[in-house]
Length: 122
Image 1 (spheres, rainbow, N blue to C red):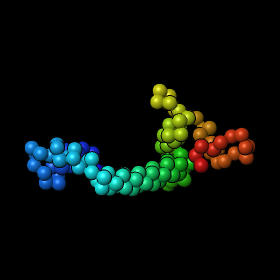
Image 2: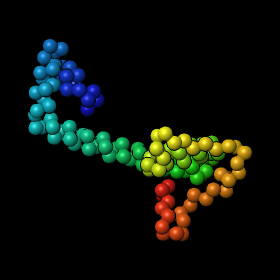
Image 3: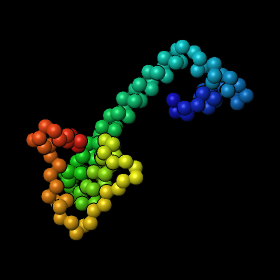
Image 4: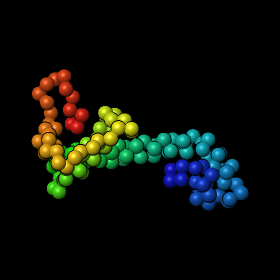
């Protein structure tokens, strides 16, 4: 799981340099090894999903200015990252803000009462 390479994993398990390729291949065909890898992969996905959810929550807090010390620039960057995550912005698009603009200070990102508008931050 660490190396994501059967040959390297076999070496780490103590197989010789010479036989590690064959042993890694053999072990990858073993049913017990396959079950163990599937189990560990699922646990890893769950951990990563939890981490991703926490990152999204932090970005939402930053974008909404709920974090002490959030600046207009950090809020815009958080919005940009959230928009990319939710596929509202493609890789070629960029959000720019002039610090002279005051519209951002009054931006209401809370849920809309209108059913036809989706709040992608919540």
